[in-house]
Length: 250
Image 1 (cartoon, rainbow, N blue to C red):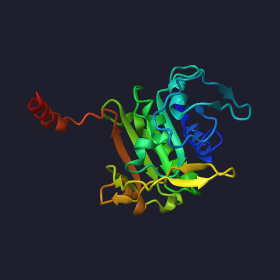
Image 2 (image 1 turned 45 degrees about the horizontal axis):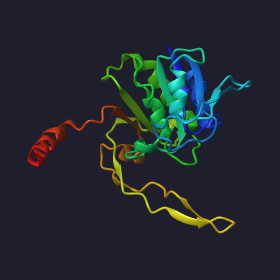
Image 3 (image 1 turned 90 degrees about the horizontal axis):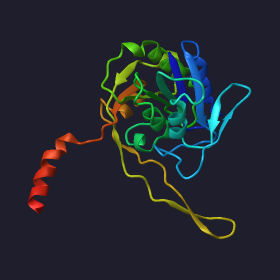
């Protein structure tokens, strides 16, 4: 199996290193990642300028001065010498739960591998100060060793979140749905040294739907959460009522 590994925390992140080391024990891996932290980039592609690539001599990793999606978009083309069978994105420093998947560069990088033969994986460690990357790496390795047995609809992405705990303290794995967060707070205004007002985007809202069965609940209880995400965003259940509404307008 050939695995393309990317992330949104950047090519120098410890999560990327831990994931590459673990997966290289069971497959051929290639790393193509942003040259800096691009968290929150979602599915953005760089279209306004060329993207530069650099191969790092110490580990062979490639970095791009672009987005996570750029990295996978170019990596799956074989541009860097490998044609991958699957994309794995992570290990992200911080959870990607509920509405986080809308903004997540980690999830977006995985999504860009949706047309390959095996379902892409996004894996995140549920702490903003992670300590147990080895736990998430072991979870990813175990899943990849068995991924070819998994039968899922085309264009399905596995969004995996792992508690920041020693592997021995992980209680198991739950298959979950996405929970939901409250709206984020207002942007925070700050004055720079020259008096110009600038703005910080507020952090994510608190979880408001964290019932049993959600990804939030699984993480709180010490379980790995696996949520299957489908790229087809069409709300089929709403098409009939939308059609009736449109008829009334004509």
